[in-house]
Amino acid sequence: MSRLAIPALAMALTLALPALAATPINETRALSPTGEVEIENLKGRIEVRVWDRAEVKIEGSLGEGVERLAIEGGRDKLAVRVKYPRRSGMNGNNSEPTQLLLTVPRRASLDIDSVSADIDVQGTAADKLSADAVSGDVLVIGAPRKAEINTVSGDQQLTINTRDASVDTVSGDVALRGRFDGEVEFNSVSGNVTITNNRENPVRKLSGSSVSGDLTLSTSLASGGEIEVDTLSGDLRLSLPRNVSATVTGESFSGDLRVEGAQVQRPKHGPGSSVSHRYGTGDGRIAVESFSGSASVILE
Image (cartoon, rainbow, N blue to C red):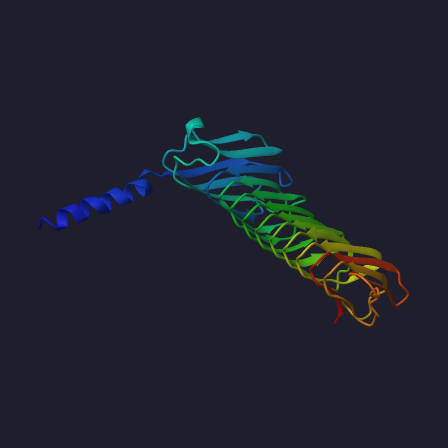
């Protein structure tokens, strides 16, 4: 072997050590078909898939420097937590990422927490799904009865059929689509929020706000339903079906205000604009408000 090859081989082996040091995970625990699973992992990845067995399969690998995987609880509630040494701090900076893959009963409720770990949940029909991440991204495809998703800078890609949904972000973008026939609530600081509801399932209540993030919303509205959205400097676009029945009010300080089919009122002196208009018999209530961002209500 040449002298040049020896250092190269040594470097390759050194780079491979963290992967070789990862500890495989292969555990199974019994769980009621409608039980609850709590999952915590600071960094790496959390994947959840479903099956029709009354048990939880836990696979993946513990990163080098992780203290241990703690599995606690019984048939009604199971907790799976990646434990980091105290010296590693909140972000587990002295440890390698941990990869978790859990296969859970289809209807089991899920409570998932991460810092920088990405979260990927597919197939769930849980009574409740809760997912929280700081910088990790969140992907959900499923039909939980109730969903609560929170991120700070991580993006959210959500395709869900649910009754009630709540999504919150600081700077991450949110794309929420599916069927929602109950209440949908959202909040954003600078992240953009896009919500697309299947119009065959009119929402009963849609509410939320943004500081500088743009809001793009498309939904139908149930009889007597309510939509209330506002933004500071972000742009707001609300799209509704042409047969919507609701009374619409809108206000803006310095942004452009538009409500299809309505005459916007502007004072002779000073800033500001407002509008009030009725679609159909006015069964529902729609309120849009902006400070400097544009706000528009479109019929499609």
